[in-house]
Length: 303
Image (cartoon, rainbow, N blue to C red; front, side, top):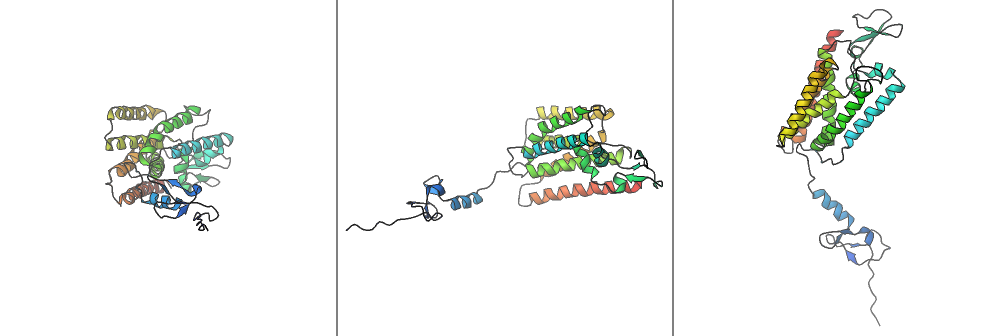
């Protein structure tokens, strides 16, 4: 009489017969649960546990490696969608462009701001508490028939964002990159608020893009890259800052450049360690605080 054979089944699929065991936990696994290992096979749970103990690759500033510039593509998409929206409804520009202080009259037209606001008029802009304009203006661009550039305004900015953004996002990682972009946009708007005429309307992603350019330079120096090409790029950026002074908002460009550079310095030169992310986040919070205080003080003086 032959001995009865012992049938073993997969621990995750009890109805599936199998005779292969995981090399780590020795539980029986079926072909669907097998994962190739250096020697033999492992079950899905052991593979998952092993992945937790593997140190994730990081960028030079401590961010997660971002091989696909998802944030850059998303920012371009948001800018393009906003541009299409303002073409369909031009009133979006009036409501969300950067305007420190202005008034809307009974006839619906825009007027130079006066304090106190005359009877029948309404304040608009930052003096009216529309603080979102500091950031929303960075996602709007000149309509096709307006300004010196028209349609070229959004095309040039998005092309620049595509070229610079992909490199900087890879250097910083997605979260740090997005924070730097938004802070640069905010810094550009605040310098416009401080130095430009209060009734001037400004819009565009240029300030944020100049901030990315500054970050590219700072991080390249930090990693010891060949600076010849980087210096040429930075020279072109500064030259455009001077040339554009008579055509666009140089205050916004300079504000973005300075803010982006300052944030990038905090990213790049904080020593590695368990507190690096916390210190970098504190530096970003400090930048926001300074910019907000400056904006509040300036708007308070306009009222």
